View 1: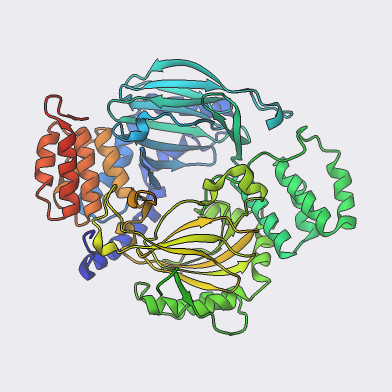
View 2 (view 1 turned 45 degrees about the vertical axis):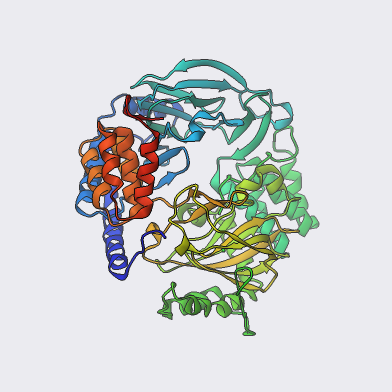
Length: 612
């Protein structure tokens, strides 16, 4: 099994988290970050933003100064977490270096050994925003551009012209590339070594939505809004309709929203709930010039989303009266339970069921958010429009509502099943309770597995046992057990809502969460990643000062085997002697780490000292 996290290591991770949070609070005042964000502080036009972006990426010396304090901190405090948002998938590791209202600054490395690096995707994305990228390392790749028609006030899907491929050009080390995401898409093709980039993406002057086109035929496939508040507003308007609630002042305000599809949804819901009261607004609205397509864009979501012997454990919901959200928050604050204790965590189920009997609180929250154009969710909710945070996370629990559109609902038809995490076989590295609040409930294909029987390597046999298909019926409470239950969620028969209590364990960042290949019954991907892993990967790939030393230190003796694997992978791609790195790693006390090193050794070309 993956190396266990004992009590001593768990305490060390928890203590490091306290230090990390404190350092994160101080980070906005650090001179290096302030110098970076100051470049975009007064940007009001696209031209000014482009000038600042180009100047930043043409001289990349600031990157080392920005990241040096965190490389040093990690060297001295291996469980520390740098204050950056990061993401890792099967192709790319990325990190957000800075964000301002005008721009975001990101850094990424593309792994040339990933199969996805050499398989062209089915679609290309016109991202909607202008970006400037410095390719610190071009990776021997080629850059392939596409061009789509521009978006104006009359553009809509019905008149969209096909996207057209343009020339393919080699990508040199140090190249500075401008992409006008209002009408351009790009792909990086066939890298032979890692591609390392720093990108400034400008929010000012962008298109209102991104567009996705078929790569071969060029046809428009999907449209998604870039306005997070608008995406959340449309979802909450759907919720209000489902719950039978309305508010004339909210409908009137949203019928004047900058996003035309929000205006459309608001007027539709206003007319449905109070046709007579909506007439003055309707008369005013019809005078507004809107795109000639009466329907809204194809995807009003932002494309982000939000596992006994059978399905997830069914909990007796009890019969207590309905409670308010504040009552549940107070109860959780007073409960000194360990979320790893299954029965203790399950004991919270009846309280969640009592909140589920409150038929007013969720609509009240939705109306409050709509009155401020979802500002509370935009500022504090890292999930997409599918999730409404009921309270900010407190470090022990997360309270949220999840929305589950049906196959016939516009959000799902437009955004696709992946936007709502349907058809994704996964477990959880945390326990959570869920209750069916509204609608018939989503369906799940349910599985279980024994985490003690696996090493946790991608491609390894998972030992999934199919339990059956279940539905989260209204009022039912389920406990999805940490690293035990696996499910593949499927759309409900009609729009549905669930309420969740997620438990947080101190070791959670270093407990793997998996995506599974059901047909092959194997582990397909490790979904968990930390900012520290991203920093190690980027520091080596970009040849930052002390990055190689940090990776060698972690490959030899980091307390968590996933970080040792991350460091080994970075060294194999960036060290002058990958053979020595792998030979050392084959003696690692973790079978998972040692096997990973042996697999890489089998792929190493001894003549070129590169992986094949």
